[in-house]
Amino acid sequence: MMTTWRWALGFAFCVPSVLAAADRNLLQNPGFEEGAAGWQMDRFHTLMTNPAAAASGRVCLLGETTAPQQAARLIQSVEVRSNRIYRFRVRARGTRGVFMALFGRLPSDRERRRIASWDRITSQWSIYEAPPISPATDGTMTLELVCPSSFSGEPGRLWVDDLELLE
Image (cartoon, rainbow, N blue to C red; front, side):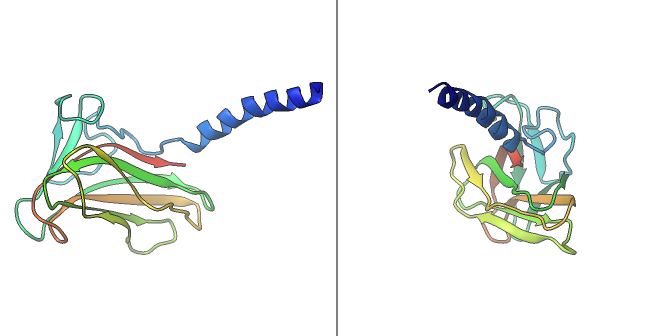
């Protein structure tokens, strides 16, 4: 009986530490609370410093396309390790018809590839998740969130906040 109790107690302390390590966000400044730090943004992006507009905190990013064939690219590079699983998710809301896509260039890639795309962005804050990413080699992975794109969607506005790349 005592052995079972000790094993259960050890398991109870071990599992939360393993789960906490698995949920480490590798993105710098994921909620834009430090402005543009860590991000490459383009001319289609604006930082919104209005707590009522943000999903959490006081800042979010607004991307806006005003004509067909435009794309607002948000880029960040992170160090990744081979044979690990990385999960990307973002909170977003948008105007009717906007499109969002995630591209990535893994350490072994010569060019970027599409990881996920979402064409049904709602007007309410929702979480959008990409399929798991597992690099074959250690190195730098560059993520490019196109938010929004009028190549595959309507011109419009897309708000993003709380981006995560979980290891």
